[in-house]
Image (cartoon, rainbow, N blue to C red; front, side):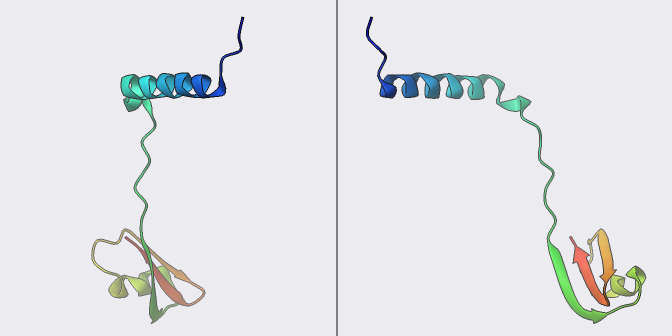
Length: 72
């Protein structure tokens, strides 16, 4: 019996992978959207000092080492 060629094995594997993706593609875990981080030029001592410098809609506002960071 002859050994299957590497090209044939690759094409067969690719076909199986594509078939599985088309049948069960919705089973993949959903990835949470990433948030953009903005560093402002504003100085701060605590997180609440940064709220006025971050764009509206930012949910996470941090004062790190005296600089405001916003995550939106």
